[in-house]
Length: 416
Image 1 (tube, one colour):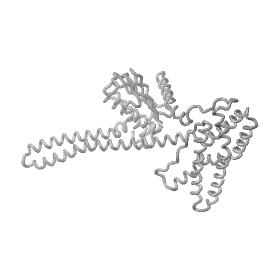
Image 2 (cartoon, one colour):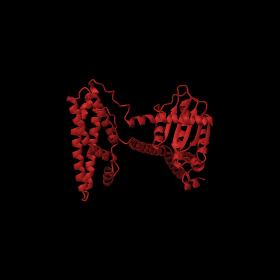
Image 3 (cartoon, rainbow, N blue to C red):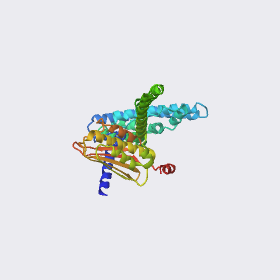
Image 4 (cartoon, rainbow, N blue to C red):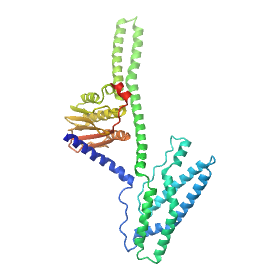
C-alpha cells in the first residue's frame, strides 16, 4: 500500500511538472504587472499616458466599425448575402482585437497570447461560415469595442486634463486607469485559457496521430515488401522450377519442394510477427496481463510483471498500453545495461497507470534518440501523460498515464 501511494505521488508530481509549462504559456508567461507608481515620470508612466490618450481614437474606430458591421450584417440577414457579410465583419473584428492586444502589449506590458485561428483545412464553405458566425473570440471583441467608447472619452479627458492641471499626481491616476484597461483587455480580448489551450492541443495531437498512422503504414508496407512478399516470390519461383523438373528429375524436384516448404514456414512466421506488431492475438484474447508477460519473456533482462486490473479497458487504450510497455522493454534490452526490471499496471479512478522501472545506468531523456519522444507524443495524443525519472547512474522509472475508458459490453463479451 505504501509503494502504491509513493507511485501515485510521483505521478502527480510528474503531471504537475509536465503540465506547468502549458499552463504558463496559456496564461501569457511570467507576471506582467508594472512596477509601483511613483511621482517621477518614468518610462512605464509615459507609456500608460500614451495608451490612455490613444483610447479615444481607438475606441471611436472600434465603435463605428462594430455598429456599422452589426447594422449592415443583421439588416441583410433576410437576404442571401446577410450571413456572409456578417461573417466577414466578425473576421474584421478579430483583426481589431489583434491590434488592441498589440497596443496593450506595447504600451501596458500586458502579455496575452493570440487566440487560435479558426480551422480552414478540411472544412466546407458552410461549415467555415458557421464557425465564423459563432466564433467566441470575435464576439468578445465586438463587445469590447461596443462598450469602450464612453471609457475612451473618459480616460482621454482625464489624462489630458491631468497632464496640465494634476501633473504631480498624474502617474498615480494613469496607473489606476491603466489597470482598469488591463483588466478589460485580459477579460475580453484574451483567449479563453482552457478552451483555447485544449483546441491547440487537439490540433497538435491530430497531427501526431496522422503522422504516427502514416509511419505505421509505411513500416507495415516495408516489412511486407522486404520480408514475406520476397519469400513468397522465391517460393513461387521455386515451385515453378520444381514443376518443370518433376518428370525429368524427381529427386531434384523433391529437394526443391522441401526448400519451398521451408520458405513457407519462414513466410508464415514473418506474417505472424507482423500481425503481432499490428495487434497481438494474445492481447485480444487474454488481455494486458498475459500480453505483457509474453513481451517480458522476450526481454533480455529478467522482468517482473504485475497487472492489477479488475476489468479490461477499451481496446484502443489497451493497445496503446501494450505497445508503450513493449517499446520501453526494448529500450531496456538495448540501452539500459540493467540486471532487473519491473512492470506495474494498475487503475487509479479514471486513469490507467503504467510504471516501468529498471536498475540500469540511467540518463534516459525524451530527446535521447531512444524513441521516448515518440512515446510521449503518442500518449499526449490521447490525453495521456509520460514522465521520465532517470538520473545518471540509475535507476530509471518511467510512468505513463492513459485515460481509462470502459470496454463496450459487446466487445467485452467477444473478448471472453
